Amino acid sequence: MVRLFNPVNSKARDAIKLIIVFTLVKVVVAFFFPATIDEAYAIVVSRQWSLSYFDHPPLSFTIARLMAWLTGTEAIFFARLPFILMGAASAWLIYLITKKIYDDTSAIWALIWFLIAPFFFISAGHFVVPDGPLNLALLLSFYCLLPLLLKQQPGSNWRPWLGFGLFLAIALLAKYQAVLFGLSILIFLTTTPFGRSQLATIPPWIAAGICILGLLPVLVWNMQNDFISFSFQSARAGNETGLQPLNFLITMLGQAVYLLPITFILALGLSAKRLRPTKSPAEAALSWLVLLPFTIFAIIALVSSKSLPHWPMSGFLSRVSIGWKLVRKK
Image (tube, rainbow, N blue to C red):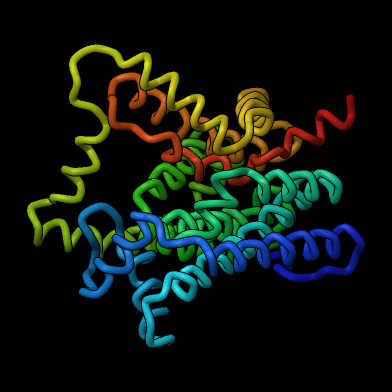
């Protein structure tokens, strides 16, 4: 498994400087900007700890409560600090993943566009919401598999798969969207020669068992509460009669704004182009991680008036502006 921290070249040092600058900006904003409705809700609800909650799994609420316990205050500035740090860690992983798949320059571009994308800067890497823990856990999960995907893992494949399972279990404790990440990887495995060769071994199945452990608290809580969380989330997927083209358009525009339009277009275009394996299975895996959540939530947006643009954002994580490598070469 590759090292998480080895800033030996100038590009890595530049990446660290960028992350530090943006992290400091977030710290200043966190001090002056009042709590949003979602953040206030999370802090108040977390006062009574539970295996899960009405709208989300327990991880983000638990982090908010731990910060209140450690600092002796529910002040929003202190509640936001771990989420800001998770955003910084996610940014570093974006750099590392892109560097390993492509090169240093592409990694810097990916990092820059991740840092300035409104959704990842303002919400997912800053506020007390489930997206921060979700994104970090998903990136760590993918990072664990990267040596295998790049065919750099000698010998046993136990270590990458165990790391993948552990961090995906944590992601499942953060937000339901983690299920689509796991499903994307499963589809990738069943549709590629590399993936089928992995499925013929034991470690991926052990990893799947570990992932299920992350769902257990949510399943137990829902069984105790008439599956109300699942009912609430499924109802948002649409129960209207007829298509909702206006909502679909608003959702697509919202996603373009959240990512920045050029990033949104490049991520989708590159994913569609590289859906089939090329030089390494990593390309196909990245494409499934983008296209499956995007497609599912696009369909939901077309049949529901209650969908939100940020639902598929975690799928874009590892594809944020990787397309700039192609732009540079033209």
